[in-house]
Structure formats: C-alpha cells, structure tokens
Image 1: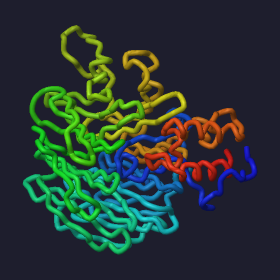
Image 2: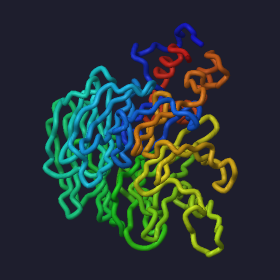
Image 3: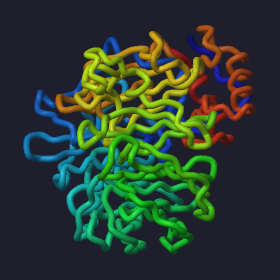
Image 4: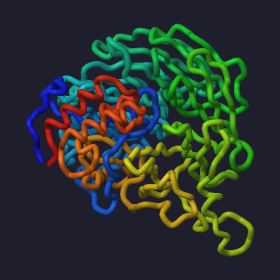
Length: 477
C-alpha cells in the first residue's frame, strides 16, 4: 500500500521516523509513560527475542529506550559483567554492545537516548558515574566520575545545546543533581539538595524536578539555579521520579510503615510548587501516568510488609477510582484475608508500566512481579471479563513502545511484540492511505487528542504534521 508523496506538507528528512520515540525511562524527560499506537501489540507471538546466546539477564526493572529511528537500547548482565546493548527494533538484531560500570545496590536505572543512529547519544548512569555512548556504534564519547553511586535514578537528555541531568545516591544526605554537557562531557552544574535514593529527575518547560527521601520536592532551571521548594515536606519520602503533565507535577512517596495505601501522592503547580492536592496511595518508586481525561494510573505496592503489589487508578481530583487487588479479589477460602491467587496480580512498587492510547481507548501494558505482561482495558470494570485483553508469560520489565513494537526485558532476555496489523499513517484504519487519513489526523490534532502526537514528544505541534507526512509518504507494508 503506497502513494506518491503529497504536496500538503514537505517531509523533513530521508531517515525514517516512527510515530512514537520512547527515549527515556517512562517515555520522555517529562516522564509520562504514554504511547499513541494504531493497534495493540500481539502478546500471543513475539516479533523477536534476544538473549545474547542464552547469557542475557536484565538489570532488574531497568527499562529499554527506543530512538526515533528504531534503535532499542537496553542494559543487561552477561554473568558478572554489565553491558549496554543496541538492537534493531524491527528485527532484534544486535547492532553493538558496550561494557559499562556494574550497577550498584541492584540499581535499575534506565538509559536515555537522543538523536538517531547517525550521530545520536546514549546516556547511561551506572556505578559511580555517567557515560555517553555513540548511538552509531557504542563507542565511548565521554565519561564523568561522580565519586558517588547512582542508584535507580535514570538520566534525562534535555535542552539545546543538549545536557544530561542525573542525580546521585546519598540516603544519609548530600545527594546531588548534576548537569553534564551532552557533547563534551563537561560538568555544567553540580548542586547538593538533600538525602536521596532513586531520585529520577523529570524535566519540563525548562524546569528540573527532583524529590528527596525527606519528602521535599524542588525545581531548578536548566542551569540548576533553584526555582522553588515545596512549603511543607510530606511525611514520607520520594524514592522515585515525578511526572509533569500540563503544568502540574505528580509525585508519589514510599512509606515504610503501616499497611496498604500508607503513602501519599501529591500534585503540585510546576511553576510555583504550590500544593494542589494530596491523596493516599500505595508505596511506590514508580512514576504516575496521567491520561488525557485526567485519570492517574499508578503501579505500586510490594508483596509483604503489610502491602500488596497492585495498580491504582485515581480521578483528576486525586480520589481513588479502583485498586486492582480490591477490585478483583475473590475470597476463595472464605478466611477474610487477601491471599495470593485470589486477585489479579500486576504492577508493583518497582515496575513502570506504559499506557497505550489506542483508537479504542487507553490500555495499560503492565508486568507482574514474577514475570509476564498483560494488557488491561482502562475503560472497563476491573472485575469484568473483558478487562484483561491479553497476556503472556514472556518479558515483565518496564516496557518501551515505539518503532512498531513493545519491548520488555526480563531475566531470560529481551522480547518484542508487534502492533496487531497497525499502520500509523492509515489513521482511519480502512486499509488504504487517502486524504481521509489526513483529515482524521487533523481532527485528532484539533481535539487535542494525543493520538496525533506523531513524534511522541508529549505535545501537539507542527512537527507532528511533518512526522505524519513522512510516515504517509513511506506507506504501509
């Protein structure tokens, strides 16, 4: 199915681009893990798998990232040695591997990528520093020794000129946020801000948002000059990263004491730090996902310590709509206790799921604590028969979605699932590329629907039209 290029828009580049680039942990520097897809991935049959000859083991819940031209970058263990691998998103072919400093304290920090395989950058925070790798061949461009561990904190690549933002691990105090020139590796800024663990930075509208384990959220500009600090620390600490959506910061805490939903998720004004609301939630290091309709999806909870791994969904005001465990619990033995096997078990404190915005509505692609993935219909009742759309025992780590595939790493390798018969350019889904696909795309764009976020940057701009034009001209295979 192919049409001649239309004169409606001028294509920017000859290099193919994909409708969604998943360049960071939780998708983008804003950390809102949503991908607009034309159809759901087929979990029944992998498009490809990669296990490095049976030796690959994932770095915990470290998630893959995918460049705009279809390079999957993932961290993994081969025995006692750690590597960053680059794989082709379409075929799973290994393009290169590069040794990295072994992750400390079971860190699951994910890499970040910017640009294409022709001169792009991969930033990896592992061990006691950060390294910049050439996306073309994995060669080292620069490295920065931070002199202190990086644990569970995934870097961000932002700005023009580009810089890498990362935080360090210092639970007793003295955690730092560091800015590194993405080209030279020179340190541009280095600011101490509090006791830290897993403080993945979110970056939006020129602001760097980071939280510490004393329950304090802060904002800096890209030069790391302070902008604001919240007025009242929360009772429990931030052990993961926030998400930033439509001028608001969403940040959950991890409370170590108490039973279920012992922690708090807060919403702050991104410009001022003013608290907009707080709500009880399960403990987590994961990043909230904010849907177009304002609902918030949170993977949280741990199996033990008075908690249970789960998924929670809240409305735009912070009121909980449902908890997966409660909504699907069936007291099979009649003992009044929630036991394993009596409820759906997906999500958890260390797992970052992804929301797939499909023509039929939002669907959650989420892993289970013991491995495997499922597709959950977020518009369905969790107790209904159609709530679980599909499932697989493969994969299980934080998924990345781009280049026509959903990719997940687990202890036995990397697996990719292709979208079911999807072609983004066939926007109306009629099997042909016509002017009606442009009209459908235009209507979605005008309605503010993220299905029209073709370039996957989290906003609707002229570049989405250029992206769509390129995909339309490339045709559907």
